[in-house]
Amino acid sequence: MPKTVELIIDGKSHHLPVIEGSENELAIDISDLRDNTGYVTLDVGYKNTGATQSAITFLDGETGILRYRGYAIEDLAEKSSFLEVAYLLVFGELPTKAQLDKFTHDITTHTLVHEDVKKILDGFPSTSHPMGVLASLFCAQTAFYPESLDPNRSTEGVYLSIVRSLAKMPTFAAWAYKNAVGHPVNYPDNKLGYCARFLKMMFALPAEDFEVDEVVADALDKLLILHADHEQNCSTSTVRIVGSSKASIYSSISAGINALWGPLHGGANQEVIVMLENIKKDGGNTDKWIDKAKDKNDPFRLMGFGHRVYKNFDPRAKIIKKAADDVLKKLGVNDPVLDIAKRLEEIALKDPYFVERKLYPNVDFYSGIIYRALGIPVDMFTVMFAMGRMPGWIAQWKELRENKEPIGRPRQIYTGQKLRPFLEISKR
Ligand code: ACO
Image 1 (cartoon, rainbow, N blue to C red):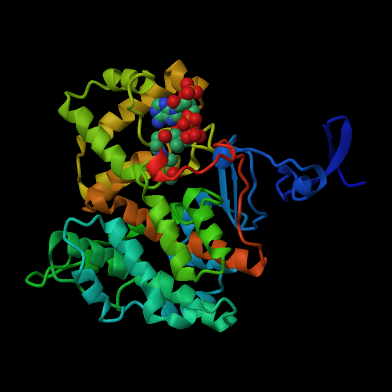
Image 2 (cartoon, protein in one colour):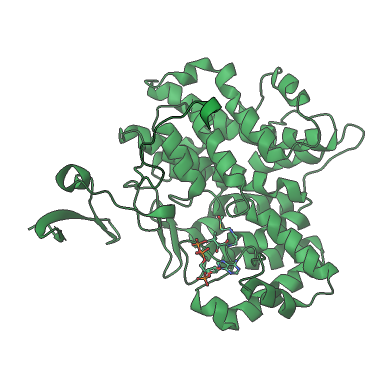
C-alpha cells in the first residue's frame, strides 16, 4: 500500500501521498492541498520545499555526498574532464570515446561569437562588473539566434543551443575581462582545449607571445568540474523558473548568471578573498575576526563558511583545499592568505558557535585562493563559477523541458492593508 501522511485540519483528516526518491529521500506531495483544504504551505527561503523531481544531481548535506548522475564527485574530479562531465550532466550517461570526440568537436567549432557582439561589448564602460557583462552578452544570443526563442524547438535545434552555450561561454567570459582592463579582445584558438583556449583569450596580449601553462589549465578544468551542478540552489532554481515560462535557454541561463552573482551565492568566492586580505592587512589576528563573525551586533560573516544544505562538510571544499595546496606548490606560489584561511578553518571547526550551527567551509572558501594563484583577478572569480555551472544549468533547463513541468508560480500569504476607500489627492 502506498505510504501516506495524515493531515488533520479543523478535525477533518486528509491523506497526502509520500514520494520517495531513489536515494530514499522522502517528500509529502502537497500538490492538491489547496484544492482539497483551502490551505497553502508557507516556507520562506524554500528550506523544506522540493520544487521538482530531478535525476541529475544527488547531494546529501548530512553526510557530505555529492554525485552527478550517480557518479561520485571525488571520482569525477580525479579521473574525468570538464567536457566529459558536461556531457554526463546534460545527456545522463558518460559518453563513449566517439561521443565525446563529437561533442568536443561540436563545441570547438562554435567558440567564435558574432562580430557584432563586440559592438555590444563596446557599449559597456570599463567599470562594469564582468558578471553583468557576461549575463548581458549571454542573453544577447537570443538576438543572434532568434530561432532559439521557439518553445517547440526540435531536438537538433536544442542540441545546437546547448553546444553554443558551452562553446561561447569562455569567449564571453574572457571578453568581459578584456573590457574591464581596456585591452583588445582575443579570438578563440581552436587548436587548444576548453580551458587552455579560455586562458589564452583571457591573458594573451597582442605584443607578447603566450604559452598556456598546462598546470593552470588542468587546475581550472578540475575547478569547473567541482562547480558543474549542485541541484536546486538559488541560481539553478532561477534557471528552472525562468525556463518554466518557456523562455529560451539563453534568457533562462542569463537569469541564472544574475542570481549567481550575489555575495550569498557565487559571489562569495570574491568576498572570501576580500575578507582574507582585510584580515591580513589588519595584522592577521584570526581570533578577532572569528569573534566578529560570532557577534550578532556585527554584520560581518565568515565568508565561505556555512551552507544551506551541507551540515557536515562540503565535499567540494575538501577536494579544493587539497588542490589549493597542490597548485600553489606546482606553481611555486606562496600566498599568505592560504595560511590565514587554514587558521580560520582550524579555529572555527573547534569553536562551539560554528560547531553547534554546523558551519563548515564551503566550495568558495578555498576556490578564490586557487583562482588567484592561477592569475585570475578577483572580479572574475564568480565568472569562473558561472563557466563551471553552465552544464548544470543546461541539464536542469533541458530536464524541466523534457518533463513538461508547469510554469513556476508560488503562492503567498498576503499581510498588507485590507480594502480601503481611495481619497483623491486634494482630500489627503
Ligand atoms: N558566519 C557567521 N555566522 C553564520 C555564517 C557565517 N558564514 N553562516 C551562518 N551563520 C549563522 C547565522 O547567523 C545563524 O545564526 P543564528 O541561528 O544564531 O541566527 C545560523 O548560522 C544559520 O544561518 P542562516 O543564515 O540561517 O543559514 P542559511 O542556510 O539561511 O544560509 C548561507 C546559508 C547563506 C550560505 C550562510 O551560511 C552564509 O551567509 N554564508 C556566508 C556566505 C557564503 O559563503 N555563501 C556561499 C554559499 S555556497 C554557494 O552558494 C556556492
